[in-house]
Image (cartoon, rainbow, N blue to C red; front, side):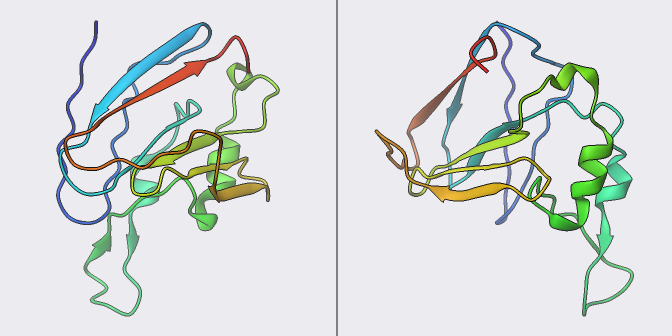
Length: 142
């Protein structure tokens, strides 16, 4: 059993666990909500993504400060994400999928002009501080 703990502060944070690549089978993870209303999700492997390419100068602010906010939905980065495509991605077209704890909505994108943001789904529930959210990923089903 592998456990990873990510503690964040502020309004927007991204944690990436790049040392565990799932290629097939069923995978399950639990997330203990300790504060706020995070987005919890999964993204396809991007082994050659340069972390420095996602840090940009902050617009309309001190040019010596950098925006360390990162999102897999950042339209200025979509070409970079698609360029990292490998044969391991297969033929599926969903490259990122997230659950929003506040309302329980689902978000996904294919990085090529198709995305669904804030989708309601059967059984949808939000969560709050103290809740544990489980996510099941079945790569054999697609």
